[in-house]
Length: 417
Image (tube, rainbow, N blue to C red; front, side, top):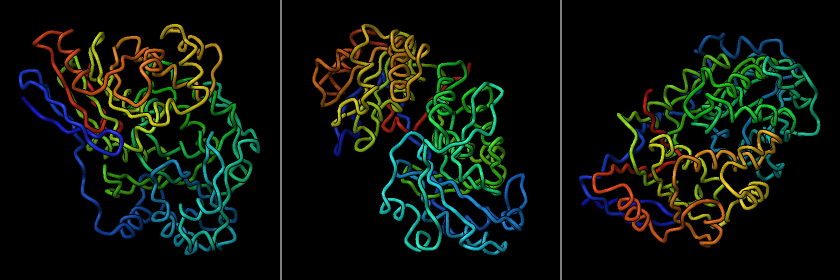
């Protein structure tokens, strides 16, 4: 019998799995933190991937915009920005020529205190910092897939654009980072929705860029916007920098994804009957909207008709108004999938994503939500992962296979076709 501790809210809980059933425990293969972050960033800027060095590219530019992630992302912008700005100054730019634009996508505007925290006190007091305004965007073209590309005016009017961010799996666009700083970062509502509706098309999934319509559309939008250079940090599970990639907005991004794959992508010989998955505890399991990432990742390891025992406290319930409305009003798991095709709505889109999983997999949910709510959203409430596992083992038989993913929000299992 194997005893395994799993994160749940701000503590741990235990599960016991018979040795004969345990197919494995999937954990990240963390790369070590770089010894000197500044040196790592400077080296990336001076030796970019498929690009001239930043100092050379930026020479003679008078309206430089740096795209920076908002407070909802774990990007260490306060570490990335000083070397970038030093290179810009070395190229002949003045601090007055540089604007930092926080890519909010569809998120709320940030306070001055939040902006200062993200970039650091020194940069905040030297460089103009502004929030993206979703209602002040101008059209710069249309992608080959029909997405109208409306970009925040100060970005569209810049003569040099640097995209910054961090790389991690994205549940439908393959990976974060790269041109996602533009779309959805600094685009209009109609542009974001036009791109996001592609998430229901074949090929959209975590860990995949090529032949992923959503990612390819994002990259095309970035090209239309004229992103000149990108700088992305790669973080291990402790949120420490293990690598910085810089250079061509697409080619440097793709090289960066290889480091994510090394740490978080785990190949399986075959899918299993049952996956026990923890989202990683608080704050990753603060609501179901956030916990969806763990459910999505775990689903790639489960056979059709199999089960996931998901640990997600959801102290804030479902977590998003439209998402909650769609999940509660749906009479079956197919309705949200049908609704999103007829009328795409941000927020509600995750109802369709979760229901796509629920159409082929049974989910036992360990949470603080009431049994009634859990049943209303087509999941099966259980008080502990052990209770869920015991039920699933009875259902699939004494020889059923069980896989454990202690940090399902980060780790991506996959089985090659």
